[in-house]
Amino acid sequence: MTIKSGLSGLTLPAAALLAFALAAPLPAAAQMEGTQPPIAAEDLTDEQLEAFAAAAAEVGEITQQLQIQAQAIETEQELMELQEQANMQMVEAVEEQGLTVDEYNMIFQVAQVDPELNERLVQMMQR
Image (cartoon, rainbow, N blue to C red; front, side, top):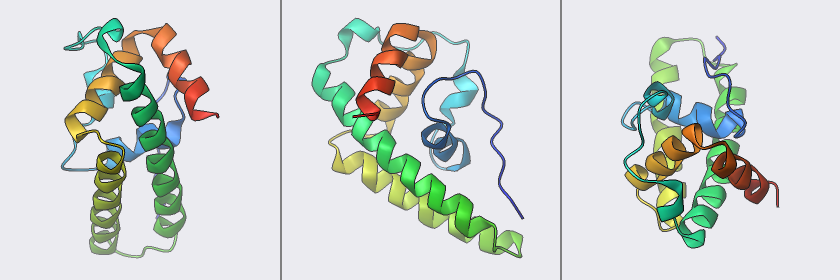
């Protein structure tokens, strides 16, 4: 069984985005496309953006491992367990950077509608 991403049209690394699309308890930020984010990009601090970039890089690594491990999964139950484990790791990665999951998703949502912020985050993640 393989996991496929339904996300498209975004320049942030797909792996970082895919993780939250697969993470059941986390709001699937990709589904918020087209809605107005609750905060403007100008209201985000450099510290928040750096924390987001670091967390997104970690989430991307977790997602890559999830995709690799999912290839060997034979049952839906095993996949659900793997996703739950990955979800816990992703939440931990976000919180280790000093963000809540809601803050992470809010920044993600703002980046979806603000191309300038999106590009800035991509550059931060590539450092």
